[in-house]
Image (cartoon, rainbow over all chains, first blue to last red; front, side, top):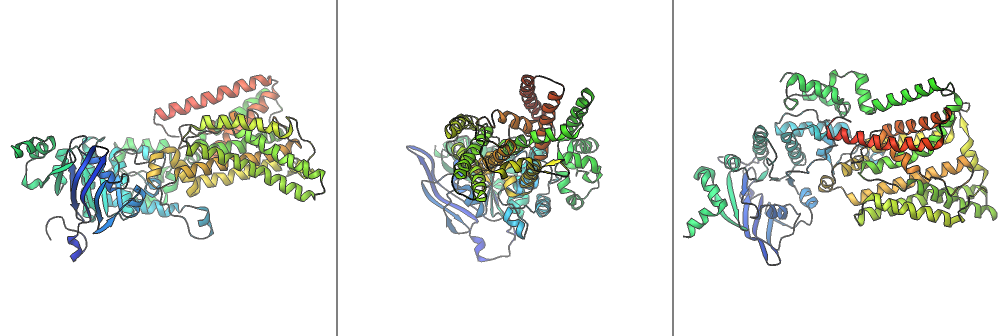
Length: 267
Length: 371
């Protein structure tokens, strides 16, 4: 197999994208934020979503993760039409969003953050009290984090003791641990230093290699160009280009984002 | 990098590492240059240090011992049975309220109405008991109904607080300030602002029974047991974890699927219930229900929490810390009485301590230091 190989053995379903949006529109009164956006991501694939501020990137992400309701259009997860009313429903269905901020509770430690909302209770009568199985969660969190290949201090460290890259790793660790099928990375490197940006890039490749479909929303064009299999450019609520990094130069990407490439094409 | 610790080894130490302390963390950072690329050497942290950082209130415990010793130097009557009983009895009310307050403060909220709920629930239960005693009811029934009314009243007021705070998104400070005023008025309405002294003997027995040759009053035992149970709930259960999560980062808690609003209702309800228990014990202690019961108690409860390391910004605090905080407040009060300081000055001291402790908490957060 060449290209972004899914981890599963070859089956006909592999032609079905893991996540697909078709003709999504979002209107606020007369304001058209999204005008018929279609795109898809296959398992094991990293797709970049770039565009200037106000192009509609966040709106699209919020629609996929259930935080916003679309005006029209379809979202398909493994070929099944889905209609999430909340991010919780989306998360339970395997769509994990990694937010650029506010993702972790700073006073909770790493395993508590990873398991927050899905804590494992012990068996037996203590279960009724919600008695937490701390050993299990600490061990499982360590295993999940090891798969991110980012070196971490102990899983019992508080989140506010971690670096920005490690926090992203914890957020991604949740996705891995919960068996997510789709991971939406919303500006994962916005607040990070160069070295940590590199770590997050590696992290992104790792989760794609785990068989997840990854949508990377970023202003960091060189990084998007570097790690994505293809790049969707959103401009005024429309996808104006679907670029493959091996077939274009990084300046082309920038050109599409600013709209100059579109203008040149039209003229 | 410079450490050979394997992740698997570390796991067994996982829990201890939770609060393994600034010392160990800094040491790792110093030797490895970057904490990020090294595993922590939890195993090398001495047991005592690990224990003390786990309880997280090392310095407050030290302050408590210092205060006790200071008063012992100033007055020879500090380390006596009488002083212990007085201090412990005095602390019962504040300990239970502080335990209630701890849950609330950890959610980044505050409950100013704890003292008022105490007074109201005590009065409500006592009014019913008084009425029932004048009829032909068995004493057992009177006591059971009276206690139930106290607990249910406390719970109900707490739930109302929680509902208003979570549904209307109002600041807890304002809501509980309002309910404090309203409930204090309602307490006076219940019995025309006078106290109730006609109560079943069982109630006063509850207040005067002691164990271990008089060393351990029953109310003290009840308060300590409640503290232990609440401490376990906070540290070991899903409810406790969600309490920390809500206070630490409400948005993250919501995104994780925690029903934040519902949880706040539970927390304020639990606080109210505990205030009801405190109302019962205060009534038992005085063998009467006074309309002044619980007056000004909220300040003591908040002070005990903050001294014990709970952060008014939410997300941090332990029951052990609150226990030590309450002990410091009680010892201060007893000690100041023993060295004949005017009662007015006690109030001045306690107000100052609250502000100082909150200021210390703020500085600690700003410096990003350990708890």
